Amino acid sequence: MKKTIEIKLGDCESFTKKITSQDIFDFAEVSGDKNPIHLDEEYAKNSKFKARIAHGFHVGSFISAAIGQKLPGNGTIYLSQSLKFLAPVFINDEITAKVEVLDFPKPNRITLKTTCINQDGKIVIEGEALVIPPEDMITAKI
Image 1 (spheres, rainbow, N blue to C red):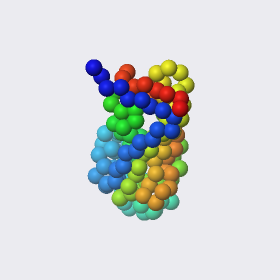
Image 2: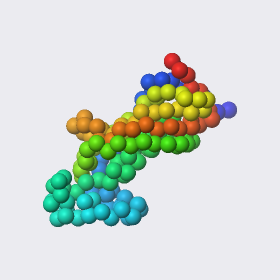
Image 3: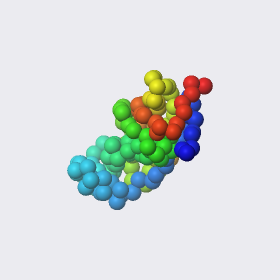
Image 4: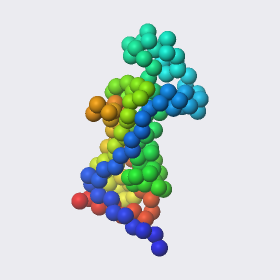
């Protein structure tokens, strides 16, 4: 028998990770995005950011970790995700991806508010996700 978990409006979870230089190089290799703003210190010094920055989708992928591992959790299926990139993320920044239940637009669907926040409390990414929760989840508009 599966364990049933109730999800309700306002439920929140998060995932936190520190950005490393190696993470950025690894993401560039996996994604194919080898823009020098991410990989070349000399190039980045002459940019408006004055230093290398993490890929926006790398940072945004932390939202997927929060959704897939925490809320709703294992077995969740992504249907859509909007992202607004609001601020750069630098090497050694600690990013917390937060997800909050906003709505149940129809049966077996959950709309989540998604944000990524740095160690200084600055929102670097915001958006919304629509997901299908695992079959053993009960949703409630409380």
